[in-house]
Length: 358
Image 1 (cartoon, rainbow, N blue to C red):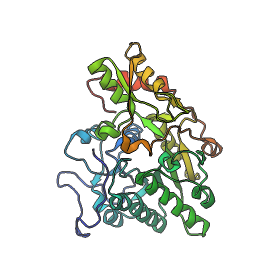
Image 2: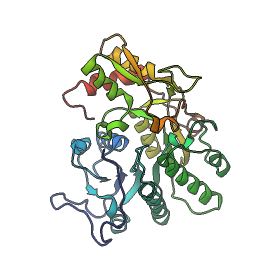
Image 3: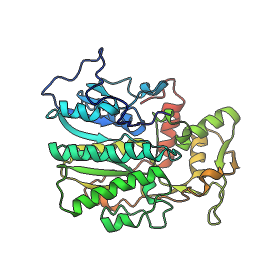
Image 4: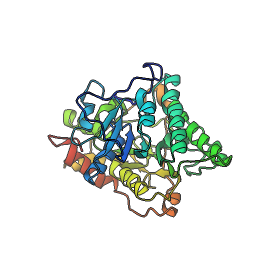
């Protein structure tokens, strides 16, 4: 699985990672920098920027030793930077970076190396925030719906110190994202300087092309698609909660293109800052998701239910649903793709195609 991993002690700080065969972006060129750009949401965002005609896109990520590089293969890039070299790169190119979209993270909810998670998801994020403050560069970063934990405190994207203090994530990944949200809130409450624009996006359960490198952390759609192709059946987790039937566990599933639309809207609206949910505002059951995959393949649903692995049972979210009022109040008025339409597009235009990449 190709997570964005930041290991600050691996390389001496004076080394940079410009590849000999890749022409660096010329000086005095305004660049958009996207971290985690070879990942799922990051690569979809790079694709959207490129399709809009943006050519000066610098990307920071690992390409790994599998096919993750294909997430970026269709588009012209200004530069490629490894995570360890990022801060040096920024200092060398200050004045050229127009804004930073920080999507890079260790996103696995089962990762157990908490020190590595905190170096990558919290400390690097804080370093980038401070750099953007110093150089007055807009900073958009990925938070996560994992910050809401079991949902007992609700799913309100209240970015105040008091509001965030009510949340208790269930895993180290969620905690790392939550800790950065809280640090930002505290700095703002203390009157500290901020980037000229900043926004944290609490992505809910996104699905769509370019997530294939994530292995078991992929959305359920490609996993069900593969199961149907191989066995004619889909497998979903049984419920271990008395209030939910098997397959009745609910998530706010969001088509990745809708996530990208929010990011593009922030790109075009520099006056908007804040912490925002990024979901549809409507929870749907996993059995609905599976049924949508069957429908996209013109098949009748055929679902088996299997026990949820014991190592994740006590960290399992049974319900998530984004409250979208704050993003709407900020001026975002685009609609959301329905679950059925998003799954149909994913299955027919990508998973069933010779080229499944966007």
